[in-house]
Image (cartoon, rainbow, N blue to C red):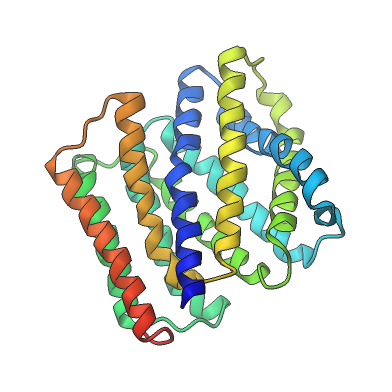
Length: 288
């Protein structure tokens, strides 16, 4: 059980900082950079951050990839999820986009028994649903009309769910550093082949935003990958709702969106949901 809580701590830490990458991507789209170039930058600058670190600390991460077929599927899912999510951010507020993107815990919970053989009970399904309702409370104005980017978010959410599921499949066979390195290099190679057709020379501000994306992405995804070593995908899924807390904060700092009382109610629902899941796991870890 101590390991499960360690997994939760790592998982939540990752999601609390990831919105910084989203803020950077949204600002870059405002500056006229294409989604392809922004997606490329997310992987390229991620690689610039992690390769020197791993060369000095974990050189064995550069060995031949373990289970490359799973790793390629996982990277393809992440590439698609990143592209579609960034595409939606270009035309939608951050909080609204996140609310729809939070369809992915549903997909994880549904497919975890099929792909991972994990046991998921009715109470955990209900907790995921309640957590999603909390996000709806937060972004209720966005649901008065359906934005054009909604389909991008639905596709991206499904892709991101399978990225998480394949992370869980790999974590017992490869080290987090190896998975992260393969992810970064593969994503960079694929996007580098495409980005020349969409290239705009970045200025100093864009380069600084690129670096923020790379650094945040490297740290957050390392924490995310490591978390699956200590807890199951279906158990961790509801805790991803903690991202809305930092997204709300960053929305206020960077875009002047001040949370109202309904937003705080929604955040409370999300936090209570995560705590409940943790307590149920302690009591009946295999069937709740």
